[in-house]
Image (cartoon, rainbow, N blue to C red; front, side):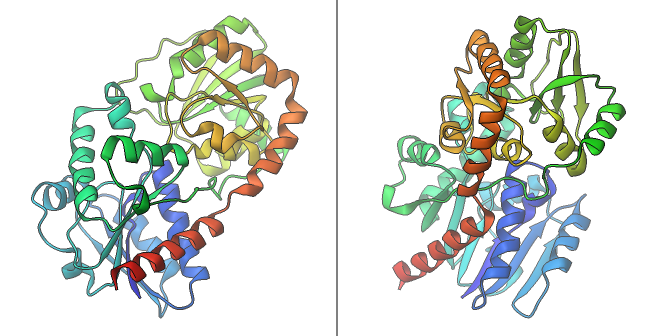
Length: 366
């Protein structure tokens, strides 16, 4: 087969970016039969896409990068639904579309749905983002031959909210970000000094947006009333979040993968009590770095965490605070369980199952 994959989203530094980058990279390593065309559209960040294509260029893999912004992609492919992707990247047998746009194509069409948070928590999204995804998902319902869900929780949401038949949905788990790993105490101390962090700290890693439940994390930290335990919030500023910070709280903004590895490796506990996640890569990243995890008892997070994390009610500040206390008391046990839990997830496993889904979709179309 000649397989087209939209890699446009690798430029944004999000969980979807991590998924797209790792899946595309591993597919080209494990698949020795099919050919690949990576398509990317961007105005300001074309260089990232071009470098990715350069790193993966081969006799069986080529790339097409065009100056198409997210707004243009939405207009062309979600609103007007014109200009088949085949005209831009050549004849293909199968197209794996992105999390943002759904171009028309004569090929077999597959898409990955990471979550349906815009339906379940619309108040946590900008109205423009909601409108884009609703247009895109209507086209997914009409045109996609198969849909990949990144968790059983997301699969249930796809069936109940979108009405897509169960036999068209495949659950394929993601993995953690491969660029994050446990680092030495020396590197941890270097990053702590850079961000003026003294002593032990609790860590939250996410885009600063309402769905990530950051205000309750801050309130739970206040309840603990531990002056020797700093709260560190790592992540870029998102939409609609105005946080009321407590004392001994540090916002770092966006950090590099090396710095992120150090933050995870040095933290006393990772706090990830999100209101909703399609998967939750950060849970695995914390475990990879030997950091105990506190996460939500809802949505996909129990699937990812298994028995290797303290599960809490994300709507209860008291529950989050109690989860932190338990995690601090049971650090070594949680770290040990975390190392076992991460063995269940890998990008190679994700890629092999995705390739199998491509082949199954091709067989169904014959």
